[in-house]
Image (cartoon, rainbow, N blue to C red):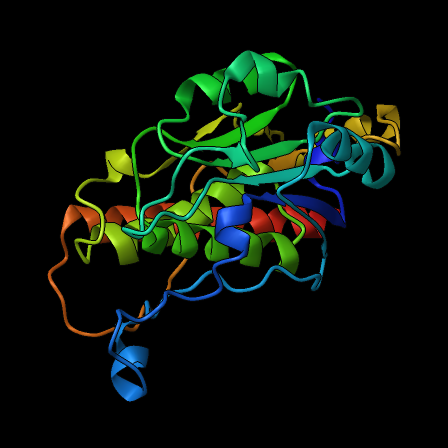
Length: 278
């Protein structure tokens, strides 16, 4: 995979939603309850509507047939697939079902992904490791998946964080995931909406290479490089000191907080460097 794929200035997203989720805009109130009381019973974290913004160009399929999915790939040629499972009544995310067809079989699903392949596939389905491995083995560079069951709250927060990074920044897939995952750990794991970070989303794919070069070698590298290849990150000093002022409410500085801040800041710095390099 070339670095240009991961650092494209625009991102074409093909979102495939299960019908049972797409038709359910909000949770219905129990029988006999209406008005303000019913509104309080609805979840306060609905999935926001997917829409094009910034670098993100969104195309949506709802409950497609396999033929419609293949046709959409041919017409849109997305570099990002977002595949969402059903939203169940208990506010859990369910399996991948389009209409009456269960699409969760790994071999059957990967046969529906046609070239040119996307750079990223996000599988928002529970227990998705085998499906993710099958997609990754087909040549998809990066696959995001959930290894366990998870709630709509966790899914909504991570998706919002991930797409916010993609639509606002020229970023590598690896850094986009790391920043979204740091946000997920801060808000979902630390606030006990998810029991453990091990239950959160995971990423299949390789980290971007970072080349450490000396200034005197930079000229020789630039003369021999092609203008069609995206530049790698260049570090001129092994030890650089930077100061940050972090503001927030008083809290215990535990490993979850500090680790999330470290990974999030590191991803932000990488995104800034990639943006300057382009």
